[in-house]
Amino acid sequence: MTPERTDVLVVGGGLVGASLACALAPLGLEVTLLEAAAPRQPDPPSYDDRTLALGAASCRILEGLGLWAGVADSATAIRQVTVTERGRPGHVLMDAAAMGLPAFGHVVEARAFGEAVLRRLEALEGVRFEWPVRATGLEQENGRVTVTAERDGQATAWSARLVIGADGANSSIRSLLGIDAHSHEYGQVAVICNVTPEVFHDHRAFERMTDTGPFALLPHVGERCGLVWCVPEEAGQALLDTDEAAFLARATERSGGALGDLQRCGRRSLYPLRRVVPERDRDGRVLLLGNAAHAIHPVGAQGFNLGLRDVAVLAELIADAQPGAGPGAGPGADPGIDPGADHLLERYSEWRRPDHASTVGWSHDMVQLFASQSPLTRLARSAALTAVGLSPTLQRRLASRAMGYRGRVPRLALGEPLGRAWEPNP
Image (tube, rainbow, N blue to C red; front, side, top):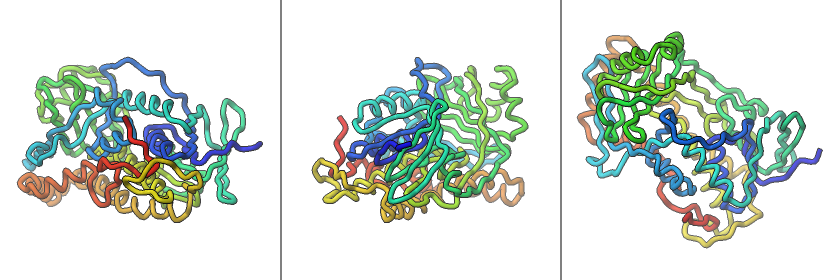
């Protein structure tokens, strides 16, 4: 069997993998995207449309990838964030306008995002999207990686200079590489749904830390809010099975009445929560991105944002590897660039390592801190929330982290072009 050849093979056609294909194709690279499941047909807007919370840096990245225009109409700005603790007085209120910002980020419909990515991929030259394809083997030799796969019961294979594993927390590529992952089960599940509150959200987001896990209300299109309610595993199914009136009453109590009574509830879904951190993010010419490299707890809504920063950094390094590349240089890619070169991928890992460690560690520590029932810990965290609430400096630091502007920031997140091979988006 002769493998099909490509420059970059992305295994996993979800939002991170597809966004990477959108970033690399304008650099003159041939990109092949493999996805195990067939893409869903576009659905009409629904009350139950799920949400993605994107920090300001992520919104800039999507704009640079030519994706923002496709989601802008369904995006809701987050202009104020309130963090409280159930049963304790400490709280933090952050206002974007008071910090001289238009917004901290946006809440975007996942459906609209998926449709925008597919439209962008169809418009780009040099991108092939193959499905349903399941990776079954991987071999590295002579400067290339061969991935064998199964499609409709038939064996097939691809050969690439760089393979990206963007296939989720249970990554098959990570398993094929033999990379062990440290997994921590939180013993929690997240109940996700849309609700309509009595009081208009007015672009305000609320996160309430409780003894059973975080509870969040995110501003959504129209009068809706996205609800994320973390509870122990044994309580999750009961919340799905209870009738709507009882569910809304319990959710209103858990929210602390931040937006009055919750009056309507959409379809409820359940997601188990765990942290997955592999021992390393690469092996030879194979690199892990997104949840394959870091699956984290949803507190602070940082998971997908972290994956988009992975995309922006890798695209920037590949763009800069082209001779004469750099901000402001003219168009035209060098087909001789090696996107899987060892020095390039090592620079990627060095750049991303601090952000990965900080974001993964911060989300884990927050969950552990607010789960503790120690009287001293409860007193300390309430005092800490109060201190942040009274300090504009600490609030700015917290906001910068949430928006994705911490440490070394990729050019796309700053609204700057990648380099000479990058064609501006209309």
